[in-house]
Length: 348
Image (cartoon, rainbow, N blue to C red; front, side):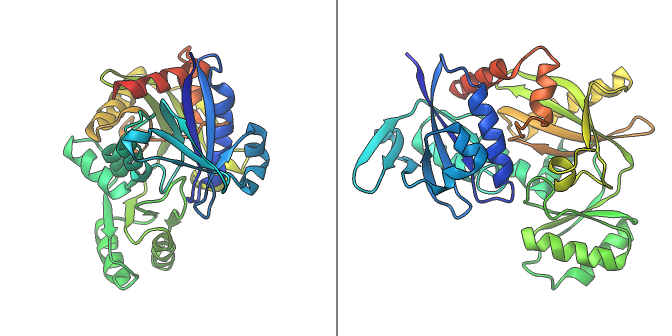
């Protein structure tokens, strides 16, 4: 008998469109002999809709749907409440696959709903999702286990009233150029590179449009290297990959809109450096109580020094996404990878 699988995508974050692309690829890659798939799309306005056809996810027409579908938090009714406004149906669900990048999907928010429902789900739990989504919190975890990372300064004021004070501290501790990032935002949204005080002020103001908690980091000159991790009690690291950005840094446009940006699987690096990346990726994943999957990003300096950048607990599954590419290089195709991730949900 097939298991009933709910795939949830879209969401209210800035990565809504990327989530839809990832979801369509995941739905097409899931083993249909094992799973019957129920698709739930969350619009940018926060409406939950039952989606019939995967093609409607690709062309965006799913957003015009009129059938509501929500996950029940009640253990007595484990599944999806589906209604067209006149009748209500409960669809029993065995497992949930969230494909929600960014805020309200990758930050522990929806994972809390899954915990309340009692339905097994793919990926990291509440703590790992929240800690990894929040860049300042991730810094604290990495510091605790002695992982080398960029020096940083934070501004957690509710508004821009502390900008001058923050800039003074940043200029004393760091040197230009500096990277400025919202603590909670996905896919490099709101991230800027500041080369002087004027740019630093504008960068902090921009970051605060996405989150009032802002991280300012020293610039690391190095190659951008990524590693995929997979597992529950036993965690495995993939081969490493390299991001080659056409822009000054790998921002949202470079990732998704610029065909000149590219990713390289198993780049030319010393084996000791690759192993350091892989071991650090596993260590960071475990430190934040990671489960299921994550992509861990690093810089590798010319000296060979490995510097941790960030961890992404729900990496993309688009055609250019590094996570599935790295596992395919390990001999695990997307169909098998998705099956492993779904089966891991029952081991939590």
